Length: 213
Image 1 (cartoon, rainbow, N blue to C red):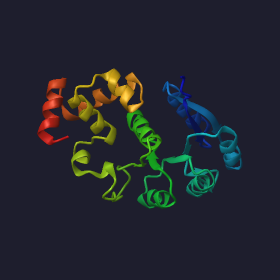
Image 2 (image 1 turned 30 degrees about the vertical axis):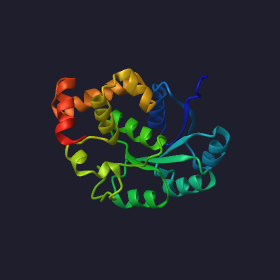
Image 3 (image 1 turned 60 degrees about the vertical axis):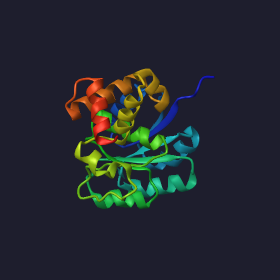
Image 4 (image 1 turned 90 degrees about the vertical axis):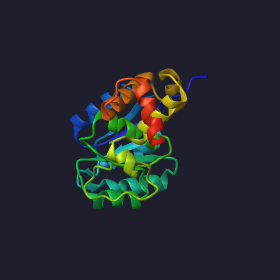
């Protein structure tokens, strides 16, 4: 049985950014950018026509409030995931997006691993509200608000991978378990080693045991 790729719709009126994001996301073997929207008038027609799993939405679309567009989208299409990707590092806007029922809020200066982690978290049924947004207080049930993970700058997905390493899974097994590509796992593991200052699996397992990960 061949599974269809996850369909992602990009809504951003900056042509260069929209096209660049498409190229980046289309590199993921299990994802497909099913459409690009540059004008607010085309948003709901495109959602209905393309039936995406996820919408990545700018917060300012030719003067139209992206949060309000996202709120209408999740109201009209209950199975749709919507994440804001914006240049506005403002906790007030992040909180508005969360209260509107949107699934995530990320900044356009995120690194590629951060962006992919956030999108996969949302596609996996979680929410992802960027902890780097100025002065935002995470809620207690936010997995990215954990003091330990925040101190070490570890993402929720990186913690998951550390746990799977401790279980003895190899990269191929982890990719299958988490529903991501082999390359994605390798990238996460490289980032984990860099953040923790470790060089091999044995040191990573020792770290996990010591800190109860």
